[in-house]
Length: 100
Image (cartoon, rainbow, N blue to C red; front, side):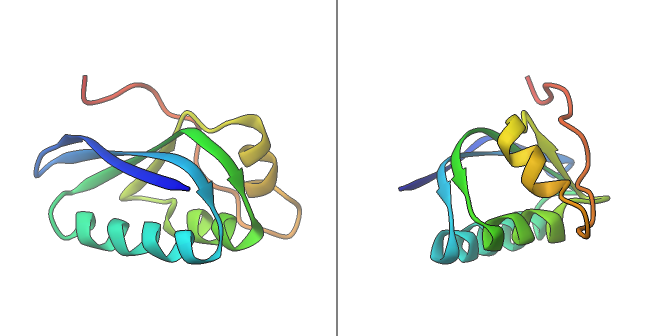
């Protein structure tokens, strides 16, 4: 199961809360939502505190999007370990609470 909740939204910054599992088809859904939101906002924060499982495909999606316009926030340790595995590009930090 995957739930995406837009908890804060403005033209400057938006926060997308992700809960559940990010695997194959769900990763594609997350990617579609990221693309849609980046058309509407300057900076997107992905709040990952509710993510319970992440496969390599989901980690690849997060690695791809993590950067200048997308920040990962509240990254659980097991996700951090997947994102920072040797031979992969490191994702950005846990971030701080923003947008309220």
